[in-house]
Length: 86
Image (cartoon, rainbow, N blue to C red):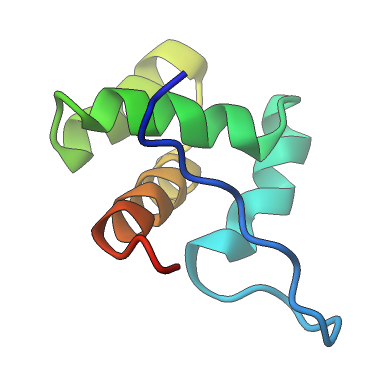
């Protein structure tokens, strides 16, 4: 697990749908059968040594993830790492 761990956001307290990349997280869990936290950990580990699109390509090739789902995972991790206050 990465020392740069990024956590999945909590659902909006008002019951509304999440915005941005997090809006994909429920369907990612359903489609690939793993908690979104596992995908976030994988992306955080790989982003230490690889650029965004290489991590997206890895998730697609090695884990069968669709492009939109892979990109949402990587985008969320990159944004959280860029702004630790998130």
